[in-house]
Amino acid sequence: MNKRVSKILSVALSVAMASSILVFGAGCSKRQKLVIYNWGEYIAEDTISKFEAQFPQYEVVYRTFETNETMYPNLENGYDVIIPSEYMVCRLIEEDWIQPVDWTKLPNVTKYMDPMFNDFTYTDDKEISDSVLDYAIPYLYCTVGLVYDANKIDLPEGTTDPAVIWDVIFDEANAGEIGMYDSMRESIGTALNYLGYSINSMDDAELEEALQLLISQKADLRPAYGVDNLKDKMASGELSASIAWSGDHIVMLDRIEELGNTDIDLQYVLPEGSNWSVDMMCVPTNCQNYEGAMDFINFMYDPQIALENCEYVGYSTPNTAAKDMLDPEVSGNLYYYPTEEIFATLEVYYTSDELEERYTEIWNTVKASS
Image (cartoon, rainbow, N blue to C red):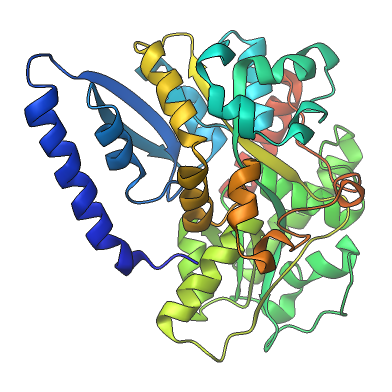
């Protein structure tokens, strides 16, 4: 598990190594900038320094975003590698925002990527779905479920019923103690899943029902909205339950241990019909350093690097060698590494101009409500 304090020495050593290589091996040429755009708290602390040590010709500029929707309007700023979720990848393919990757430059990906990613349906557009791996390489994946303190919240053991599980975050008895991702797809998807509908619904009546549910929740339960901040709120005991990506559950457990909060019994449960998603490394069409992008993506599939990122971030790795090195308690957890049967009960998010417009309208209405 992640022990951030223990990484300080390795960070210092990596930086020193990178500096020495620059002085003695790359002093005659200007380093090429490589601009990475990734989710917040979504890479091990020393990954970038290790990459620069191995590839001293590159100087990494690292920037972060919180959701796919906040990433999207910034693409014109110019990045070499971006890491959106699969539904956004499908949109970017359709809109020509990303370019194909060169698999001949990605030997680690060829060797270590779990072959199950070849067979997934990433969107309802078959042509786009079949082309996803031409444009995007899986980085980490997760499911969307409920984290809760079992000392405060009582759920039937083994339940997968979304009406039972999600009732926790819509029950007024838990007012002031729940967290909601400030992300339209997760929040609207959770409401739809709770009501028994598809998380990709475009039915007007179903969407209106989800809208009113979220408005009522905001008014009556006063949820804490956010993304990374919810991990700290759950670990400190400020919240009793929250929407969570499965990887965030692992991070929360680490933080609870670091804080010594032995009175918190944090559990994660996955409802049927909920979401699974995979964040993918892509190269924008306005990329300025394609070779560097390929080197970075291939580096991220080095088994040791993949393992370190998986353990630090907490999300599930698509790297078969890294998975084999994980603690069996983690790699054997079906919420983190679902079987084909469990995957069959889940949905990925679909995307289209109409869907994005409708869901954005709903989410803006929720956020503007009082």
